Each structure stands twice: as structure tokens, then as C-alpha cells.
Image (cartoon, rainbow, N blue to C red):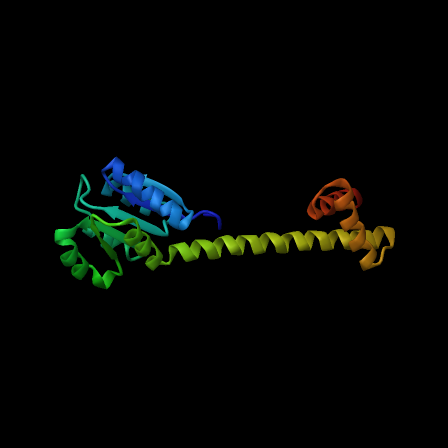
Length: 190
């Protein structure tokens, strides 16, 4: 899983609910959403290589209710369990030790978004996206510094001259500093 992708698994047998939940989750987290319609499919994904960061289970499922599935999944990831209002309190009490967030149906968009925020996934996605941006910037700075060192070594520039040369080439050729640096390294470091 890359830093820019956040895997969210929605388990629901009802297509209209999947579409609504998917839109709400994408709005709140910006993450990648995978949907399945049964507990067996969810177990198959959970046991695979990519571990979702958030699992949303809309009960009941066609092959089981979903409470046992939510408890199993909650051992390794965040879970939101959606159930009928009449049983929500009982489910919430029985799953309280697992850290499962129970949302009673029907619910408003704000209630659901608040549940997603409580899992921390929306903030985590923002942190991952910010980290990826910082790492990209660091990589670019290293490349530019290598290009400066190349100019210093081969053309006997001073560091300020090499810096100015890269800046000027980028501006004159309408390229990024990264592109200019890559071209310099490619030219001199064969």
C-alpha cells in the first residue's frame, strides 16, 4: 500500500447502501474504497496481503449477521458496525471492549462522518499524504544537490553559481528544477 492510498473496506449486501457509504467515506477520507457483499468475501480480503485501515460493516450480511466478523477484524484494524436502531445499544455494549464504533440506522451523514473521524482514519490519510509530499520534496532536493555537485566537479562552478545555473535553466526552458537536474546528471555522469 502506498502512502497515497488508504484502503477502506465496506461490507454490505445492499447496493444502495454501498453507494451512499462509499460517497460519504470518500468525502471524509479521500481514500481508496473496496466493497464486498458478504462476510466470507470480507474475510478473504482481510486474510490477504493488503490490510484495510477501516472496515465498515452494514448488518445484516447475507451469510451472517456481522457482529462476530466485526470483533475478529477489530483485533487488527478500525471497525464501524452499522445496525438497526432497536439493537444498536445491545451491540454497542457487547462490542465495547473491542473498540468497535456502532452506528444505529437510520443515521445522518454527519453522524456517519463523525464515526469515521473517531477512527482517526481521516487524519491518518492527511498525515500520509503530507508525508508523501515531504518525501518527494526531499528526493527532489537531493537530486538538485547532486546536479550542483556535478556542475562544481565538471564545470568548476561555485555552489551559488551552480544553484543560479539550475534556476535559470529551469526558468528559460520552462522546466522544473528536477528536470534540469536530471538532465545535468545524465549529461555528465555517463
